[in-house]
Image 1: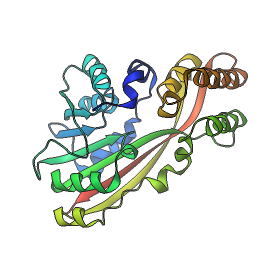
Image 2 (image 1 turned 90 degrees about the horizontal axis):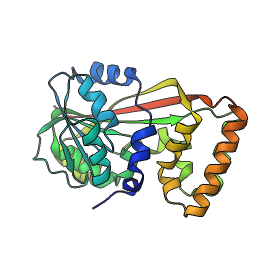
Image 3 (image 1 turned 180 degrees about the vertical axis):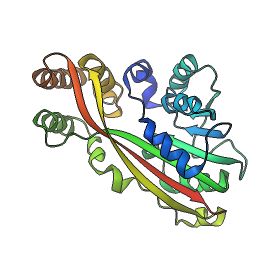
Image 4 (image 1 turned 135 degrees about the vertical axis):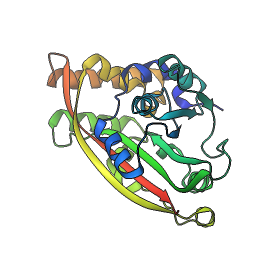
Length: 254
């Protein structure tokens, strides 16, 4: 077991953005108060969302296949238990959990297998929640240049354009319905602006799967081009970039 991201755990931890407070406001509004609630945060990575959930009063267990990622999570949030675990085979008994979260992670899971596991471990009336940050500055010349570069050089980048439509889970599969069923419970899109230094933007880029996967020489060439694009647009080294965070919810039938 291991994660593609393990090799970039330090960069991931240093520069990935957190999530807007309104995402957690909406999570509580729709699923119930977080204080004292047990949350299993799958695909937790370095624990960005896990720590935000803890700050809201939740009792969180962070689970991920990446040992190095969880080591960073443990350093940053020693109060959060970390478990190396696969979301396709959750180490959880049936109908045991009220809330499962997947921050910036659900797209890495095989849909039929993962949804069946969600349906198995959720209590009746329990919730699945997934959310994603993504830059959303299409139409700005620098950003269009940046995206064109990544789409040209980085296989797998284009999924970001289709996030809302392609990542809505299918809860209609036989194994899911036998356990539940689980039904969609709403979607929220939160617009916000990310203020970030050029250095941190490039560090963040090094933590992206499509950059990690490149051959080293190609990776450095692409990052140099990214640096040139953002340097031309933001000569003071401070970026202000439009972002969106998409929250998707589902609920197991009571």
